[in-house]
Length: 427
Image 1 (cartoon, rainbow, N blue to C red):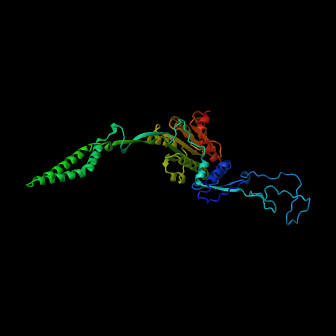
Image 2: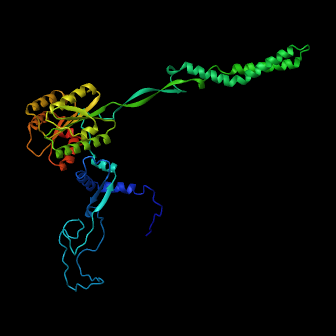
Image 3: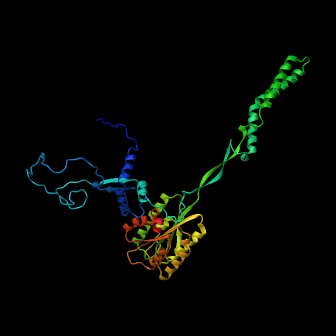
């Protein structure tokens, strides 16, 4: 049997392939650990990776060993406690197992869980795997491109219709000057010499004949330079450049009324931070519109959306009205894929809930590709949930989910944006 030992020095990325292989092999365990870890993070902590623990039993390798049974004799040095025939008790469950649970024990042994650190990119890749923006019309964001023609300078080959005459003649003139300049200078000098010889009292006939022959040869060479050559031709050049045929915008509507306590607002922020990370990582150049509302709604920037302390009463229709106005003003239905996500505790002024239904069914759901509503509460559902439930029963592009605790956020997020969600719902 031959043994090969690789003694080459490892490069700086020595563990890249092994790392990717490890992630693929234990993807299920890592994804479970990632989904658990997200609930332990702070509301805005999205700029780092994660250290996750994998139980030792899940990464154990198969080994060959002797089977149980049979008589064996073993010698353990330093044995002053046991005699032949003594039975050793099994350590109590949960003690000495390395899992960090149970009380202190003076016996038992085990191994700690395997701790594996993943980078931010690996963390987000695992977090948003198999997710997409539902799209009823099957147009893909920034994947379907249209090639448009643009001017791209000049080239030496092309169609006759693209010939640029001025640039071609300019090149021809430069070439003819360059190829005949020395000959023209010599011809001018020869003409002066011939005139000087002819003005002498006794012109040297032989010298005059030589100059005339040289001049005739120069004129012939100058005339032989073509007026225009293929090298001089310049054609207008055009190239096709990709242009996105579809664009997308996501509206984020958040209730900040007095009924939303701090814990509820934190859960809403967690959901929207997940959504923002998903959009910016999965899709290129997507626009996000942030709307906060209590009795009045206003469009805000990202900083104010997540950190403003403003509060008040609750009129949900104010946010829906503002969204409708922004869509009409800035986002044409034919050019944009419009999506929306709304988070609320379900409280709303009773007379306003039917108004929300009217705006949703007659305006917004006619232009949006997908509208997701999440209600964050541990109480019984209010009138807004019942109104929206009727909408969900009649519109395929509307979905609603209920979040009770922080642990519900990530599973519900995946449920709302999992791939092929629309096709599964239709089936």
